Amino acid sequence: MVVPAFSQAPEGRQRGTAEAPAAKEDQGVPIPPETNSVTKHDWSEGGRTVHYTATAGNLLIRDDQDKANGSIFYVAYTEDGVDAKNRPVTFFYNGGPGAATIWLHMGSLGPVRVITQSPDATGPAPFEWVQNPQSLIDKSDLVFVDAPLCGFSRAVGKGTAKDFAGTDQDIRAFEKFIVRYITVTQRWNSPKFLFGESYGTTRSAGLVAALQNDGIEFNGVTLLSSILNYNRRNPGLDYEAIGYVPSFAAIAYHHKKVKTNVSMAEWVQQARVFARGPYNEALQQGDKLPAAEFDAMAAKLAAITGLCVEYVKESKLRISPTRFRKELLRGDERILGRYDARFMGWDPDAAGENPGYDPSDTGISGVYVGAFHDYIQRELKYVSQEPYYLSGPGLNQAWDFKHRPPGAPGGGGGGRGGEQTAPDVAVDLSDAMRKNPHLHVFSANGYFDLATPFFSTEYDLSHMDLPAKLVGNVQFGYYPAGHMVYLNVEALKELKADMVKFYATAQQH
Image 1 (spheres, rainbow, N blue to C red):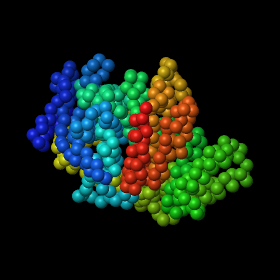
Image 2 (image 1 turned 180 degrees about the vertical axis):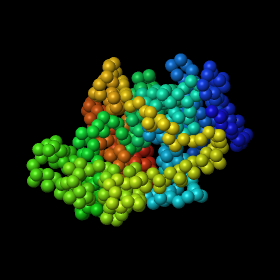
Image 3 (image 1 turned 45 degrees about the vertical axis):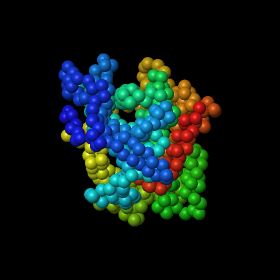
């Protein structure tokens, strides 16, 4: 690994090391020092000016033998001259598993954000990044963290991908990073928050419980576009089919493929009632569903989702989200995005069964990657000879999904209480909330997200068996956007407003 080389700090301020270890240990990849680039900035909006410090650098995490095995890259934005106990700190990360945090960093609640043409594909360079009026920097310090082996984070010393490529391995690595960060920066007495997106919500639910069990209490957790229970993806279950129906309804409404005079929120609510009621009951009957009821159910499902009745019948009442992306606008020869179904694209094979790509991915990747590299080099003065990995090489494919929730007994099994073959971290989140009844959770959801449908999230978060007094600690927000809610600037404004309320509530005792 090549140690990053930095240019001279502005205002004569030196970039140094924080308790830097020796450059080498026994064998393996050389261990870099904990080095950072420090720059000064201002953010202003609505009469509030924040003078803040940006710190881009790395911290080392250590294995059970107290040997450094990971170098974790982060960018922190901290307000100057504020007492730590009066200033929250929020840790942000994307998901994957195995994805870097470039998306949240450059698009969501950081001090700057890239300009995109969402939901149209954004063109090539030159790209533009600007001050973000919707930043959370006025309410909290912000720390954007790249997961091990992603972005500029690396395994070092004797560390290998096996140390980090797994549900529990990942949780341990992030816990060690957070402990290291709040120790180096003296933030033990600050209010603390987690903000995860996608698989980052899986991480957050397990992480807040792990931190809680080690005596580190958090005030709040924001779950953006959640996947909390991987067991529902088992083949043969109707749970997943039911979970997508309200998302299909919202997307069909957006693309004007349904006939209704009600608002989208009302239309989605009708779809919720239908999905958990008549639709669920019909699927429960399986092959014994009478023909007349099958036909009536197909007609109703088609009306809600914007698909033709014959297609719904051929699909046996179970609509695949991938096929839906191809089928809804087939007559217009367009396909829909998976992460954000507002995005549309063209396939070379208009008669195909599945879309050939995801226009909500290809439409933004170039601008995010280009603007991020320009920003950290020019503005944050961080230069590295290492490549920035959007996805850790081979990390997702090697992921070990086994998970042991807090208090789980030894042994196998996939149940909620024992060791799980696939994570159901709603168990972890429930455990953390019971032990820390002041913990608040905010679930942010995009109506047009076909990666993590909001109806499934509602189900998971409402089945945590919480005491009645704690049910109100879980709140929800819904936005006219997809998986990356912040791609719609109007939705981002709504999200910021909800975050302001959430942070105020979560810091009350």
